[in-house]
Image (cartoon, rainbow, N blue to C red; front, side, top):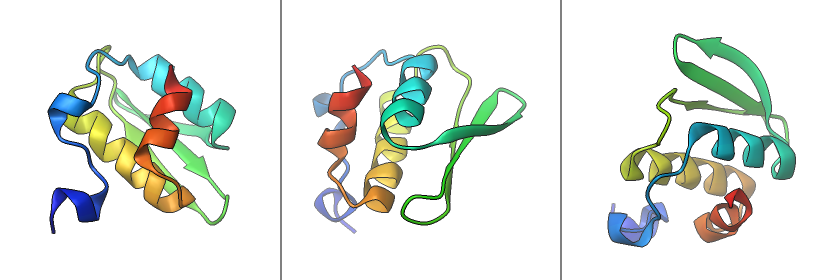
Length: 91
């Protein structure tokens, strides 16, 4: 699969330095996710809209670009929106 098929931006197009708390807050507030569990340093979020989906957010204070891209791509695919739409609601 290519980068375009996965809807993942190259690392130079994704802002660095996102904190876990910013991403968790945005996904809960704007995308109907809720914090359902914490396993070690990972927070597990879940939504039932439009169907059940879980995503784990690592406990690093600043998320790495590749990790952020993977999380955004998974949420975007599940919600049927672009990765950029989700990214705009985080900050």
